[in-house]
Image 1 (cartoon, helix red, strand yellow):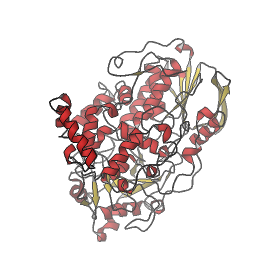
Image 2 (cartoon, rainbow, N blue to C red):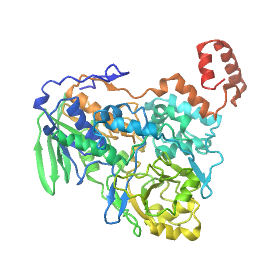
Image 3 (cartoon, rainbow, N blue to C red):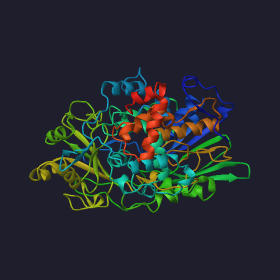
Image 4 (cartoon, helix red, strand yellow):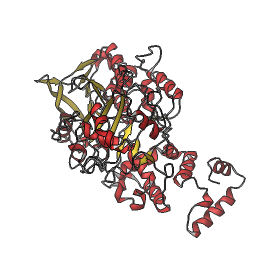
Length: 593
């Protein structure tokens, strides 16, 4: 069974898909309730015309949302977010989904309507992207500082086919010059890359986000929800699905899915699960579709508080064990061990949510980020990175209030560190060893708070640490076949969804990837007669390539580039040939001449 087709443009974007043949006889079982799972349920209803009461969502936790969570912790009287997702205008399937979901705050609008208007009214723009020396702006902030050699390495990576990048790491395709650049500093802290991460995935990011090169300093191409992403994205999805009769089964662990395999087909025949502690078996027919969220970056998360670090010991977790049990049955179901085992120690595993209940920190935020955090406008517009932090600490401050129930005196700051295994500059511990107060103290130190005031300010706040052992497992070096295809070869009723399923060209650790795999899975298994919008083709747009070239070379014209003499001569001769043409107009428009 193959995906029907990808679409381009708006010819198919506005059509309503026909009702698939025999859909009234079909049911669906969806493992997990993260964004990919919820999107799959919506597409089954909206485009597959499946009745909601024939859709079952099987969730191991007591609440939905997967990795897109945000809650108020009553015990600590503080807010908890394990992370947030950066979004942008060219998430084609994400916006296709949310154009159909009513907003909870404005029922006459879609979630997309609300999101669009909020970001038009209050666009992202980071006034300070990187700091050092306890709150001082990086003098070279805005310059990418890529040497000609590093630029060439970027181009070489982009030109290398994926088959030649199997199991390669980023530090195997770039030299030290590249890692000393501001480009790498911006790139890794925006997307959570590490030098040991997959070169294959790095290549995908470079091609997928060419349009962001010009805005790496100010982050103006990003978009964020008004409130936290759980309340603004997940809750509207849950409301939509419940109104359509979708059945949610919480405290339900799917232990295994038995797949009958012959030479010509693979058919899921049985779901073995544990619901509220009781073992159960669901017998399946070929008309019962199964969508599996395989693996999880937030599986086995542990939490601390102001005076206790988050527990570092953890079990493998049901989502990973299920994938292992499936992979043991068929080579086409991927290799989960590549992602959940042998994760390097130099890694991001800790994030923390800080709740301030007074304004002592406000002057320091205003000094660094040049915005009033209580203005209602987005503050950091993405991460602010602390370059000289041993942890490579970063923080993000979204629009306040970030929760509907947040009080006027409360201010929420989200922290993370990409090198959790090193000792801090102020608190001489690794991040996992720190309690909430200590994590807050380290951040306050880098924000320029006088050392005499740091302890009291950290005690007055409430900081909840999260330990997430698999948070960067998406980026583990991989080979072709390590992730199962969304619909494996010859599969009749089983699909994989989420960021550990394989779809071409798109990039993991994004909301778009979750929704894209869900759309592809539903459209393929139900044979929906509507195209899946293709991945935004930024790498094939000469305008974006020219713009990227200008900024990769720190806003130099072609004639100003530090090139060997033969290449300088070729540029000079090439410019003569395009004189008076449309190509010359484009080169002028994008400041290359």
